[in-house]
Amino acid sequence: MSVRYSIVIPAYNEELVIEESYKRLKSVMDTTNEEYELIFVNDGSRDKTGEMLSSLCDKDKNVKMIDFSRNFGHQTAITAGMDNSSGQAVVVIDADLQDPPEVILDMIKKWKEGYDVVYGKRAKRKGETFFKLFTAKVFYRFLKSMTSVDIPVDTGDFRLIDRKVCDELSALTEKNRYVRGLVSWVGFKQTDVTYIREERFAGETKYPLKKMIKFAMDGLTAFSYKPLKLSSLLGAVLSVSSIIWLIVSVLIKYVGNASVPGWACAISIPLFFNGLILMMLGIMGEYIGRIYDESKNRPLYIIREKKGFSDGENC
Ligand code: UDP
Ligand code: MG
Image (cartoon, rainbow, N blue to C red; front, top):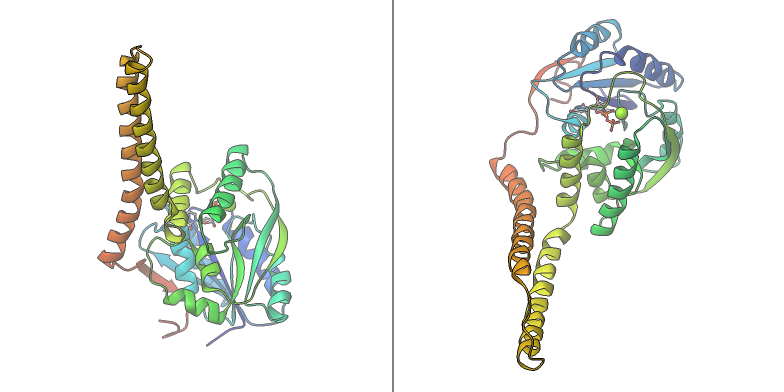
């Protein structure tokens, strides 16, 4: 049975926020007077998130849960929620209330005006560390300069997408997903609503530096070959420079009649270039690892249990 709106909420160890998140989402969605479903994806939480979601499903028929067999990651959780949604419009929102649920109503308004994708643009981000704000700002701009796909800066995954966009996304099988980039890639009529990103309601970020780096590499490698091209360019520039330097050294020795000093250079220059070569190999490795993931063709996620979905729905 299809509903008007599906709200997809990924949750990983969010026992401190789940209850409040449900209440806020429910009160906002009730005001639409239209049918909706809240699809919580429990991404292998090790705290009480799963149990709490399960009892919400028992209490409220609008609540559904997808329970992963382990932690598959935020982007995969979002994908599973979308794959299992039935709404004519699908909204993705974090569980921690950093994205205010009230903004969904503005998104719905734009959708009703005829837009297929309405993404939340962060005018301000409260309560986040200087490091996070700085790296996010630099990364989004860097990514934009590296890719031909127009991925809007300062946006997260908080967005509304139309059913047809959701179906196109579900048809993409790539493994290391950078969902916000894929949404731009599929196209359709897109617009934004600006909002102030709040502080986390409770608990702490589930994105430590290691996950942030993996996420950034997924975005970069999925949408740009430029790092590979830059390697060749850098290689060419360095080769030409070394030839010029060789000629200059010979001239200094035989024309200028002076010797070129340099055992320190003889050690540090090869070290520098070996470092560069290993870095380039590392960049190639990032792409090759992702090709390997694709070739293994494992499923994107494994579901332990689905709760609240009516029989046969979206399976
Ligand atoms: N999340 C998830 N799986 C993960 C990490 C995060 O489902 O492996 C969820 C998390 O519960 C939250 C959303 O993704 O609903 C965004 O995570 P978080 O708020 O920790 O990220 P931040 O806002 O700090 O970037
Ligand atoms: Mg957050």
